[in-house]
Length: 467
Image: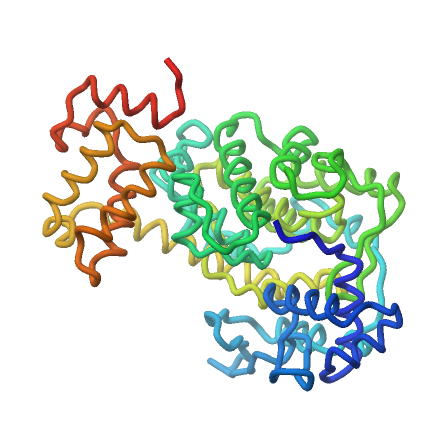
């Protein structure tokens, strides 16, 4: 496992780079004034570049590093300014958001240091104050409503759980710099197959998301904005990721910093606890599920109530009202990492929610479209499955008759596909076979010419049962 670098050391490097238009490793070393060996600094710079927190220009000793702050361009559409980050999907935002982004893209030295402002939280009055307009809330309700409305809490989330586990685990982890692909995430969650060449911390982050989502959906009747839900949500998301083994599920007692920001979070444990309880009480009192979701996306990260993993908590907590009300969940699929980060900086440093609101609405629209497409895709026969019908039957029946557990099956599918399927179809065949295997249940196994006793033995192997 790669050795863990403290956030304080990484932040010092970010600050040194932010003070310059661009700096070489030698210049950064001089600015740090810590006597850090150049090889150690180069390793840390690589970690920051790989995580998308720094941009490297050039090669060798003359290579320069800078903050990724100038990779977007303004456009004007329909009389309103919009932002288009290069290499990412276009997120349309209003003029107020453009002003926020322009500010947070300034070098750190050009932005005014600020601390936590309790009045930003105190000023919010449930069902009187609103970050989202009535028109925006009506729009989101219209696109997010499902036939499961009125059914027991969590009904819709359970219907799409297999898809949601992969989508939300991958997208939320990606916003933290995780480099797993969507397909690698699927194989990790479905088969326990770790991607080669990836840090174990990345796999842990994704699996923690899976556990946290299963907790929210599995306890849909009981989850709400209270200590039990949010502390346990943090404990699941932070499992095996924090240096202090007692920190998961516990409110912060230490000072923390925000990478690339001039915002200094609250430091007094008693005040952190007071504000945390106030956020919970306020969120619980909000009637509208979309206002409720967006409120916690703003206020949880702003308080930074935990040692780390605060934004992850806010993204999954935002789904609590959607799960309970059988609305489309917010998967964060397609949300550009840089845009999301800059929108959060607008909350931290300016207490302005306009930019994050534009990202929230756009992200929810993408989620609603995605899950609507999933429903519509059920029907027409798939020509690819039809063409490889015999191959799928041969492969899956062999896995069941063996019987194979998840890791063994994943390896077998990869090898069998390589040996028996032409190169052009190989990767799609492998992914489709994995999907078919995961969809196998007591009501459909006969199509693979499998006997009931064979299916029962395979299920015990698949689930890890010993008897």
